[in-house]
Length: 355
Ligand code: SF4
Image 1 (cartoon, rainbow, N blue to C red):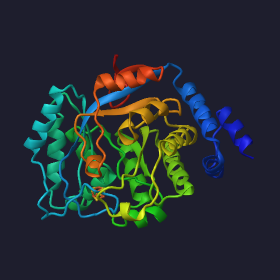
Image 2 (image 1 turned 30 degrees about the horizontal axis):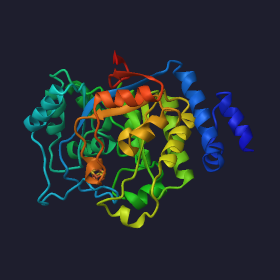
Image 3 (image 1 turned 90 degrees about the vertical axis):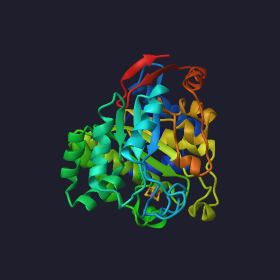
């Protein structure tokens, strides 16, 4: 009975995989929001919503993997293919720093031509500045292992020595092999993604966990994704936050066969389900850059306690036809409009200043 699951959530008890699927399929939209909000206020009693000012720099768009949902990657000899030198990357970040960023989110395509030393130098050089380096998702770590012939542990030791302390949770898409085989067959498997995250956490490198939904997945796949990251969080406690964004259809192969469109309601439901299911995650982000500011504002009443990033530079969603722009004042006013106090935070969720 769905009411029994509502009651369980209301009493802050963990729900099972089957209960999660049932809640997702049959749960009343507003009841889900109310329950998610209750769970959110148990974890974060203050009416405070945080966000970070950062930049998302992609050091290369060259990638051999060719995921069907990706509008960003280019083949090595494409006219638009690029790889930034370390000094070009540093100038981009210095420019963003002059606009006030505190964190640089650095990710790339999987470019097998880049030597292992490039990644270490990148972190080492950037770590000399005051910007926080938040770099490399699990598929990039896997590539580093393969080009260097080193183990995952050794790669993390090297990156840590260079100055890496946190990593983004990209490359997860949906952590279900059924879906991954269809949308990104050449990307690392679910097990490898989780193994790399586990190693990162064991080395003291905290990470986020992400999910890209709204394509070929079913409700069961989404709960499987949440279930796998919840289990790892039980083991390591290394995830700082969960971030969901929806698939953008423009300029990619997958968009030609997906005939559904993710609505604001779909997005809010995902945020609420994540808040309820991920009972061991402190932070659930409302990715306003994914669905716009109005949905972002509503997500703060569906379990989210963080507005994600105010990005100075973003390339991946822009290539897929989605351009989200804002300013610190605008995000702060969206948060106030929703009835919360805004605050700028660090990558590891420490308050920098109240706005
Ligand atoms: S999503 Fe990442 S791994 Fe997949 S094609 Fe795009 S850049 Fe490459």
